[in-house]
Length: 128
Figure 1 (spheres, helix red, strand yellow):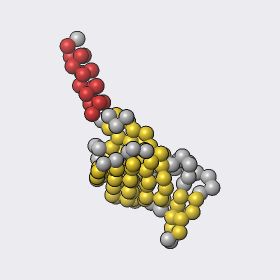
Figure 2: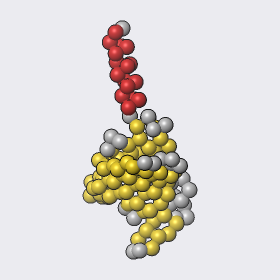
Figure 3: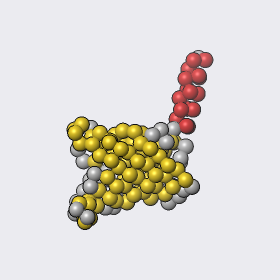
Figure 4: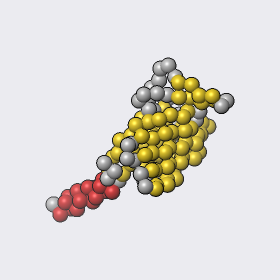
C-alpha cells in the first residue's frame, strides 16, 4: 500500500509540474511563398504543442514535425523556436518553426514551412 501511495504522489507531482500549450489555427490557414501570402479556401487545422520541457510538436495534414525547441519567456510573452524539426513521414522534410504566444489572451502566431498564421491556444498542466 505504501508503494502505491508513493507512486500516486510521484505521478501527481509530475503531472502538476508539467506545463505547456496546445494551439490551433481554427479560423484560417495562410500560406506564404515568394514574398506573397494567401488564405486557403479549405484546410485542416494544425495542432501545435509546446512547453517548458523544450519539446515541440506541430501536426499538419499527413504527419507531425517534432523535436527540441528553445524558449524565451518574458512577461506575458513566450517565444518558442524549433529548428530542424523532423517530419514523422519523411526524415528529409525538416523545417524550422517560430511560435510567439501572448499568454494573457492566449493568441499565438506561427511561422514555418511556408505558413504564417494566428492560432488560439489552451494551456495544460500548471499553466491552466
